[in-house]
Amino acid sequence: MCLPSDSGAGNLKTRPKAFVKSGSHKEEKVREVIIFRGEDGYWVAECPSLPGCISQGETKEKAVENIKEAISLYIEALKEDNLPIPEETFEAMVVAV
Image 1 (cartoon, rainbow, N blue to C red):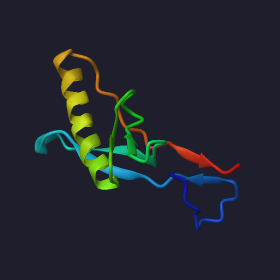
Image 2: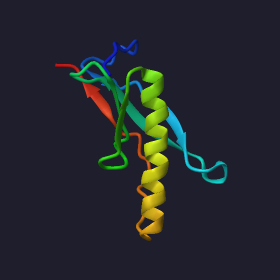
Image 3: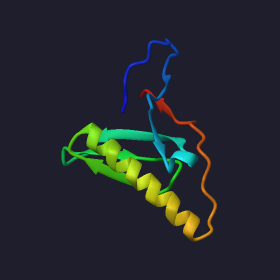
């Protein structure tokens, strides 16, 4: 999602982020989620720190609800397979062209 920045930083702007909490109450972590309107009109939600973790919904709220569930299930599957859980970095940028 691209929005104008008030920072006056020229052509390089920090991307607005939606933060979602995932996991159980004991293990809640914040993940960056990118939300954008798909070609079909649905809202697409993607968690860049978890490759392939994408969901969608008819509204932004439903897309966020669905990506929270997708993140939880993704992390649960990694744990079940004894695989490392990627850390969140929040290093995404939007470049104006």
